[in-house]
Length: 234
Ligand code: DGL
Image (cartoon, rainbow, N blue to C red; front, side, top):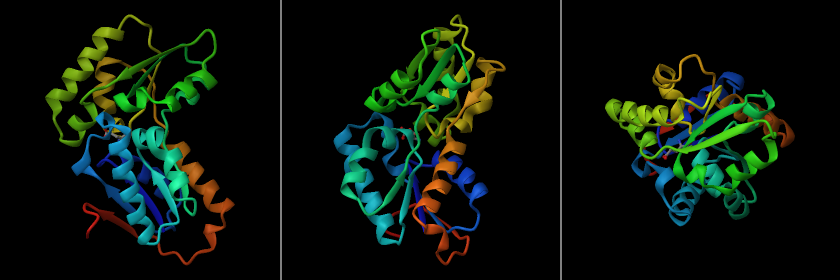
């Protein structure tokens, strides 16, 4: 059983990629919309929330946990690995490495404030950015929650502000550093026309496959069921 969670519906984009690659496994998905947004919470709050979810998924028989959320990955994954050494974790981080490897020169990274301010994001920039590349880190206050609650006017207002600030920076790629943002690709491209949008979900799916093989989880009795939970007490 593979457990996947996020602060709501964003992680479903990641789950789709994983299921497309590995349709024969069983999955439990938990969308924690009642605690959305994660991206504007303290580390202490995030650890309390995410460790409770992981413990619950573990009790339901999950051996591998996919943190389908950049915020929870960049702020909590290292500590969750220490708290649950018996579980395998696969996280989601902004696709900064992909942008740098593809040699884009001016990359806009859209993510939650907590992801943007994390040490993990700092590391990703430090380890991958070449001298002739610019990475603009944009903390998108309110955007994940506007997507979670289908607040279209707020989504457009936030994107308009980002566009006003970065329209003259010759942006040639945009990293979708929050799993909610693939839901608004069309809206982002209304402002930043024809600019490639990079999201890390395919890489997460490949890493899940690699970890399953590495840990011999592929040999389990499997049925291909997907359970979506809206409440952990269900
Ligand atoms: N979807 C999450 C992420 O990838 C979190 C959004 C939020 O709850 O702030 O960062």
